[in-house]
Image (spheres, rainbow, N blue to C red):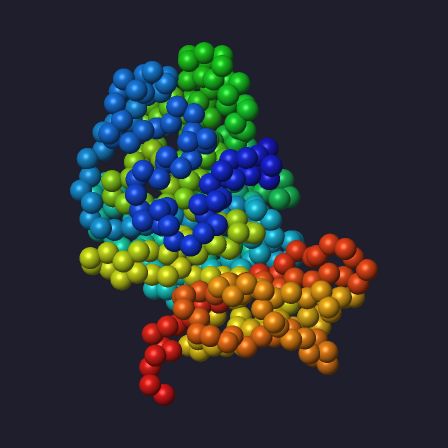
Length: 418
């Protein structure tokens, strides 16, 4: 059973508005980020401040009180699914090239990629880790993890965790094999659980409706059974779990503890701090078609002991543009351009360029080079600039989807003497 795009979108779309902007509340590392995704959680695991009576009224079991001193460390957990060198990017599929650029961006930002063991030891208070650390996770067990992502992660020396649902291991031509997984374990890969069958929310709700005892039995099979299978197939203890689709009910918490899980991951965006609940650890699910999610995931506000980190913008455009997507430029009045020479049957008169802060701009089309360009006529004030170029095909009445990209402005460099 594979998680369909439609089901995944049902779960993740409610939080996309928060993902689609620049650094905001989700990037501050607050434990209360769960409130944004109330539609995703049924009788959710509550924070330590939630009373037992409230949990009982909602039919949930509140989690154990977690008393952890904040050490100022923030961790961003990245969640991926499928990769491809040739397929069109979707919410579930990210291009292999873009994935590699994201891994390169993590290095260029100076962020430390940690192991799951490092993360767990830190959360237990047993080990110190660097502020602004990164934990890389990949869900399901697609073959492309081995063929596409693994070579990149191995090249960079980045550890990673695969959350496997056991029915999919050795499950066919698009799934990872046990042999592949064991090979990756020798090179920085650790294993987490993602249930046995990756049940859809409707299936979980149907089981829940059968009553508490039957539901508990069902959860023990999906959660506890998965852990036993994984530990029998692969070396090492499995103490981490990713909720399929991020769907959580309060009844899962005692079953998770009973089954031997310590750290359970959601699909809700936010930074993890020492006091974040171990039952609802946030993750930035990196969708192949929403570049701002990675930017938010790699953005950190300044603290009393740490400088701000402006997240990486890793984009690609179907046609060459300048400044390039994600480029850091010192010139605050650049010429912005797009090479449209490969566009077939373009209606030249329909081309429109829009620049953030300027709106529609009087761009000029050069027929010989088939390039649209506009020299910025006043200094760019923000750290980023978004541009969109849109056009119609000859004879069409509707515009094509806009080509949009973002570049960065190094404001400090622009003030340096020549």
